[in-house]
Image 1 (cartoon, rainbow, N blue to C red):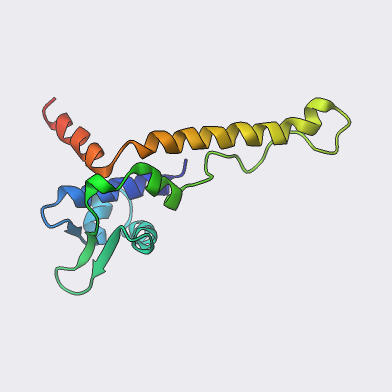
Image 2: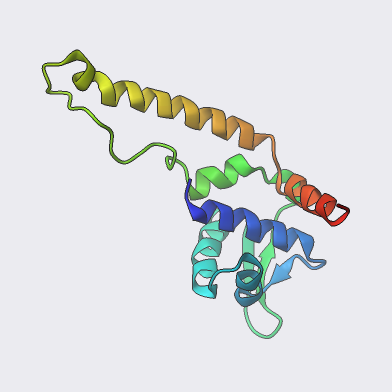
Length: 141
């Protein structure tokens, strides 16, 4: 899992929390505890995906474009991190004489693909609104 996914979810939840659903990258960065340049990179992807828009000038920033109840984490995962469950390297070599070594990559690829599909299915049941609701429950702890 990459950190851009977490930053994207955090940023969207933060925008959903704000009354006007708008904030500059500096405010989002402060809330996420990262730098504004990293926020702008993530928000650029979210903008291409249609989740946020920008307003230039004084009072500008990023605005949440969709109802938080309509944005699920699977959609954000697909946009920001799809494939990150699958490692970039796997042991074994298809040209080995050993049945274990020659088949390990293919078998592990299948295992990781199934795991990613299950992760996406789980994320599909969680919306930005749900995450915000969980955060609001923390206030009452």
